[in-house]
Amino acid sequence: MNFLQILRDGFNTIYAFFRKSLSGDQQDFTKGSIPRAVFLLAIPMILEMCMESVFAVVDIFFVGRIGKEAVATVGLTESVLALVYSVAVGLSMAATAIVSRRVGEKDREGAARSAVQSILIALCFTVLVSVSGYLLAPRILQSMGAPDQVVQIGSSYTRIMFGGAIVIMLLYLINGIFRGAGNATIAMWSLWIANGCNIILCPVLIHRYGLPGAAMATTIGRGIGVMYQLFHLVKGNGVIRIVMVHFIPDWKLIKNIFAIASTGTFQFLIGSASWIVMARIVANFSSEVIAGYQVAIRVIIFFLLPAWGMSNAAATLVGQNLGAGQPMRAQQSVWKVAKYNVVFMALVSLLFLVASGPIVRFMNHDPGVDRVAVQALQIISTGYIFFGVGMVVTNAFNGAGDTRTPVYINLVCFWIFQIPFAYFLAITLAVGPKAVFFAIVITESLVTILSVYIFRKGRWKTIKV
Image (cartoon, rainbow, N blue to C red; front, side, top):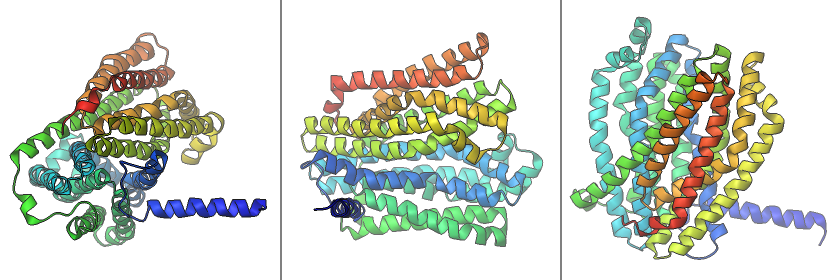
């Protein structure tokens, strides 16, 4: 067999595996090869995560052609909608943990009932948010410090975005349900469909209606993605099939879901708020430093997306294997995912160390901003291996339904250590902005060390959901 034949056979094997991962066929991840299970879940999850940030990029791209007031409106509205995103992420964590546990127990009825009860919670929350946001849109923009011109131009956009908050909530939540069921392909396709519709509709509706057209396009796109999700939930060819009887409130189950979701939401808010405070510390320096830091953070997040997709696979594998009464297989799955994430993050670290300049210059052409962004990337990338392990272990806790442990770890590491440490070095000792970058590396490493230590103690294996 010559080299070309070997190469061809290898390509065909990889292609067949890739097609299998995207086929949507139901798999049993509680038995068989762990590496195979990891990649069958991770490939669609990575592609799903790559779509998470596309909505904002597309909107800013088209809205930027309207004017700076329109861009300001989008940014300020998204800042307030962070509350909706936080609850959506928390509910998604809870849904993934509970549904994956029921699937591992081979309790399809329990999985479907848990899914619907999560949807009921989401509906109640978003009714309050949508009505309040629709009625108070001008005041929301004013409270965010928007000038009168932005309030006048942007109120309609904000009303539509808050009025359609239900599709934001359901898109996140139902994707968490499908990930928990092991059908990451539907979660991936729902976001691809939603984004495709948004890309097509955004320029058309902006041309017709102006800035409100952008909100219409985003809401319609997400709505079509949710309709695709609901079709598969009702059609029921997979593990999850919902029927009307599941909509009868189960208060005990709702309380259980709410307990997991509330700490999951708090976990997300703690992390997000700490990044806001770190940005505020950086704001004590020049505009070049502020811009360079923001460029670096966006590059970092972009390259973290595949790693987040991989770590989501750990959550599903932990939940399903705990449900199947196989805690050791759950633990082995986590270490296997962590190993793959370390390899990926090591490659990204190497890329940043040798090519951060060209990467930054692709996004920005100001030499002063470039210098700060390159410095930030090169310093922060030294901790990327720790980032990779830490996010896997955190998602393993969440997949087990132990959303409380990451909350405590985040509180200690981000708020008690990172923020005071960064401020002391950067401002009090006048080390400068690089102190903030080093503080991020040290803190993320501390998060990983604490997470691994607590994970190895094994209490997460005993969590009941």
